Image (cartoon, each protein chain N blue to C red):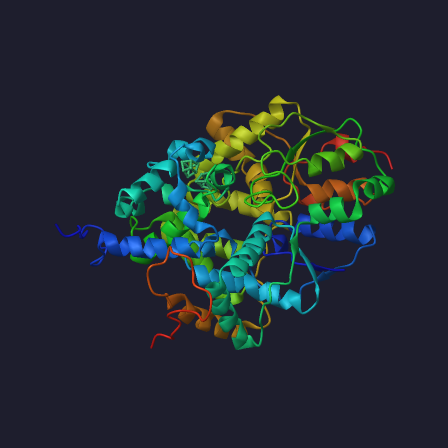
Length: 289
Length: 221
Ligand code: SF4
Ligand code: SF4
């Protein structure tokens, strides 16, 4: 089975740490990720709200390119993951849209036959590789670290492909096996507001405040997430939130692959900890090799 | 009495029945879209929505208004723009209604007909986004935000500078957009897709889509 890596646009800039650490984890576990040649933007949530067919064409181009390689797409960004899966679903169930999309793709000699499965790295790590294998490779222990596991929306919704849409536990189990404690965190799938941070900031700031508040109230040392947009909303806007709501948040928000890579023995530099805006606490860095 | 034609917002000669036809076509495209008929008005969608507290029309009311033949007032609502696409309503709806996708459909209709206040943020953000990815094939975050704020509130750009600088120092801000290699080919695909977008099959839409050759599949001139 080839894993075709589809990083997506955010992983090229604001979520570079996610990209670096995902590649590191897979390489270290001996699994090859082949980056999809000349991939394009999946169209994100925004294109869908303007033009339906064109947005499907955008994401289907990636699927058609991947189909030639005969493998599964691995998409770390929750939004890409949902959009690509949604495209698969729309094209499968609606033959008119499928005909329209393929008619467009044929302009570059592409056709899509619905043969590509889209997976999330968390799904691949836990269900293909296995928590036991990962735990046996761990070089550091996370004992004593209290984590708030934040999944966000689009990794489990709308389909809930590999985990429950209301109470996912994949990431909890993974980090529990590595020694960490998972704090009580009922807002694990509550929305961070996504792009509302740009368009209606007052709404998004409140949503993020609620999430951070819950993590802090339950004594979490850090938040761990799977989505580039959640990560930047929760981390980069803490100052604004503090100003607006008179709070005092200063809690690190990590990509789950960063923490996983560090546990598997990489250096802080390789885990791209230097890209986090809130400094990584000694509790994580101190984990003995 | 003939259906009311709105002048105020410039829905050009769009009767409610036309809006309804547009809407039904959009809904028919959604896998499982026909379930909209089965809404029991339970309000689970509204209760699950993290942003319903700031909406003017609740998700449940959207469906009620559609049934009552008041699509025009939905298109003027703040609700369709404030939805964050979190899909909480969709996974919880006991009737399996794709509430989020229905809101997308309404957004598309409102965009197409220009039904929003001037300098409306989401419209401009989406337009800037589309402009960028049509050009480069990939999104470029700094470019997107600059285009967006230039068109809405240029002063805001200054207030974002400290954050932008911080991200830049951390290596999280790309200075130049990345482009795909096959830009020319992508434009050709998009040009064709633009034509495909305009092809609309014949009514009525919400009945089962017939098997066999695609109905109404003629290239518009
Ligand atoms: S949850 Fe579903 S059935 Fe209940 S009001 Fe909302 S759309 Fe209707
Ligand atoms: S998808 Fe939109 S309407 Fe539905 S719960 Fe989320 S924000 Fe509310």
